[in-house]
Length: 235
Image 1 (cartoon, rainbow, N blue to C red):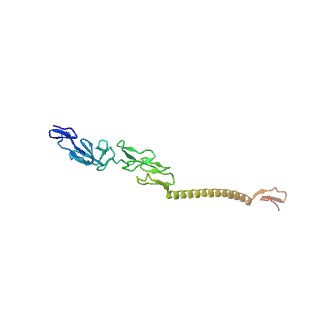
Image 2: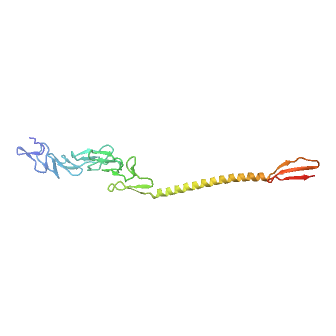
Image 3: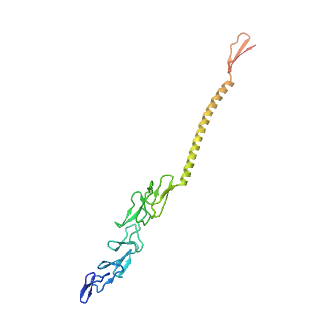
């Protein structure tokens, strides 16, 4: 006769398996479980191992699969993820995490990041934002982001000395540019004033001769100077 799961055939009858043992349908004997009984035909295995009737023992899930805690079977990891031998979860890419409630790789929520293989995302420091692929945080200007381990959080924003030096140099360049523009403006004003003075000086040193009328044996010559002097020359 064929006995149901959790029972075995003995003395012309089906008997229940002793405590902490299991059996398949039609079994003639029960097999002891390494830890505890999950169902009449399946032992409960620890870690990333599942019960295997072929070997009659707990076998670790192979790479690329994970142990589903509900069914206690090895399931293939979703596309884009992988796993190690005997894993209870899959290793997701950076910016995502293994969602244990859905057994899937989910994108980190806004304001948080993750490394590869993370089981949860870490919030970025106060005043910072996550980058586009949610693998690092961006601090405010003048600060740099320092990554911590997943145990301590998503890092911290600290003062960036290099940025401060660059800002100081930029300020000096701006000041030098302003000074240069001011000096250029002063030179232009000075040159204009010098041109006006030179024009006045040229006018004063080059008198305009004026021809005076002649009366009899006398010739009058008039010259225009700064004081408008008139010279009278007698012949």
